[in-house]
Amino acid sequence: MSLFDRDKSAERMPVALITGFLGSGKSTLLNRVLGDPRMARSLVLVNEFGEVGLDHLFMEQVGGDMVLLQSGCVCCTIQGDLDRTLRDIARRRAAAETPPFDRVLLETTGLADPAPILQLLLNHPMISHDYRLDGVVTTIDAVNGARQLDEHAEAVKQAAVADRLIMSKTDLADSSTSARLRARLEDLNPGASLYEIVQGEIDPALLFDSGPFDPSGKSDRVQQWLNAEAHDHHHHHVDRSRHDAHIGSFCLTFEEPLDWDRFNPWLMAVRASWGDKLLRVKGVLNVVGEDQPLVIHGVHRTFHPPTLLARWPDAERRSRLVFITRDLDRATVEASWAEMENAQ
Image (tube, rainbow, N blue to C red; front, side, top):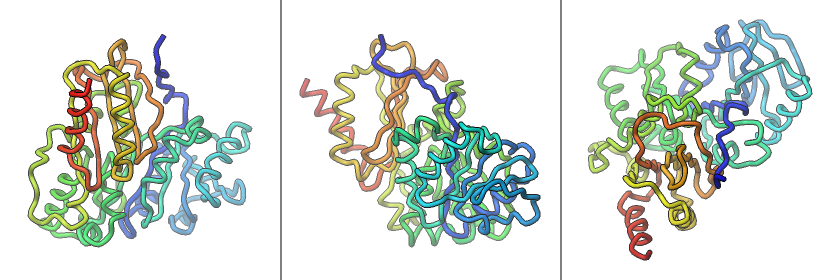
């Protein structure tokens, strides 16, 4: 019998986290996608309806904190703590007290540190019972993005943990400014897909299904997510900011199948020693005794219980572990693994 749970992601509500600094275009993007009929049966969680321009969309009041849009989307304001709102929505959905929905879009405030929200979605047992993190989408202002990255650590974190980066207002920025920002973002988060949009025009499909843990195991998503492995981590752009210099991304690769009884204590030691520096950790592992890939996913010291995917996403069978860190380099983590190996 396996030590690990089978991945039950398909049975839980997918959540797309939409983050980005103040003025980066989150509300404009939501305003656009909410009018798209392809977004029917979506629930959108926002801080206030007034921040999203819904005036031109037909609305029907469903409850004090919930409205139904003509497109079939449901909008709900976050009442108090996010975990309480999510639990209340799950209860109301189970009791058929809300219009039906199949996915959740969660918009954060512009000054939000995404880490606590990721921790809530990944490891709060009452939340993860009903919801699964489907991906993190971060909007970046093409005009002001570089300055925001320079001056605000939250903006750097938002960009660093994203699965997809959306550069907005590219029509207002000159080509050289956009090119420098794009290069900086690719250096900061090489594993993320990057798109440029104008006036919030985006294919709503880009907001979902961006994570690497889809049970269908589509290889292109996993390969994009693992781009950090191919990234030259020794390369540094000369214009990296004081914040960017503290945040990095790297991928550890293990050629042979891993002995879980040895690997897990090492990973727990990494969490104990450097948890404050782990912005995000994602791994697809080949574990001795398992035919299926084992997935791990964590933020700081909070890690989701390991799960087995139904199948490998491609022919690659090496274990790959991606770290997005603050003030923690590859050499330090590799040295801790080598020390553990030599101690056996």
